[in-house]
Length: 83
Image (cartoon, rainbow, N blue to C red):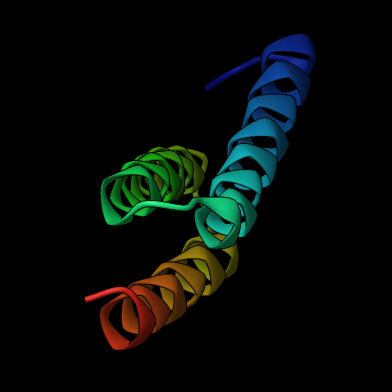
């Protein structure tokens, strides 16, 4: 079980992963080529998968579920608009 400092660092990492995933998702719309949009989509998925894994390791079930739902939304948007 992590101590208080480790837990704080892991929660900060979780916030960072979420922010990076959202940025990649936003950037996906700014790309001018399908391959660049696909790369940002891949970045977003990677960040969200990492965030989900970290939330699970920390026992944050609701957070993990929310992140999974957000990732499902991002996937649906990409498939609907970029493929």
